Length: 180
Image 1 (cartoon, one colour):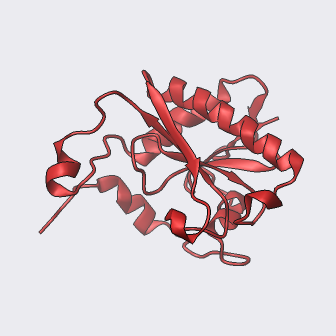
Image 2 (cartoon, rainbow, N blue to C red):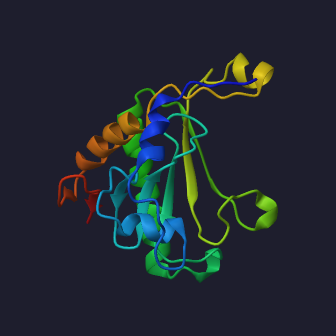
């Protein structure tokens, strides 16, 4: 039997508000909730927000997500595209600051059913910080990935890094960093 000790996951299991609203899209629902930290929404701009991935591929794995509910990249307006691109740029900077010593990034969209994305009806760009040698024997011999930092700690580091950037503010306790 495979077992992976992940004590930080209990916070997600015990959360009080487990419902979705609206059309049931988690990416439409999460940025509207009151407690951004609890819902892992770390930063937000007019048309886009940054969400810590609840199932990270690597430490610091986040998603930059347009607020518009669409699975078609061509549906985004020029303003939404620019806002999405600018928030990705800020996300790279925040991850470098928060995670220390980042040596590269994987970043991309899974578009269409054949691309393997689990939520295909709402665009989201994965941004994954990488380090030389950040893989080890665990995925090879046991098909298990070890994430070395709790999501709550990653969130706090990223929140601080976004908040330190020019043109940002935090409006309320447990709120996202607002990018102006």
